Image (cartoon, rainbow, N blue to C red):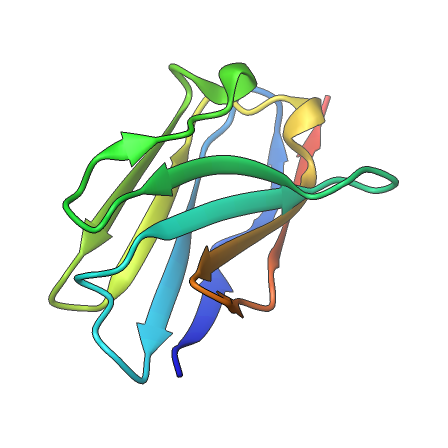
Length: 112
């Protein structure tokens, strides 16, 4: 069983940046594929990006390409979602996921 805890969300102005963290405990995630999802009010949860077990970034949502990227720190068992040039439409609760395990989510609000 892997426990995931997201952090780093908050309120930011349009054009700003945030870095979300997803800390994993219970088992090392170095051999697991990690996903970032988001869910905006009234909308379905959508996949934002995936980092495969070998560090490849895939499934990057078209609307965030060139603005978001994913990285990971093996030593700290943490995956990051770096978000730049944020837009109001990026407002959502952001979740990380590996296998069947979800984090609790962190709120990102982008003001115009």
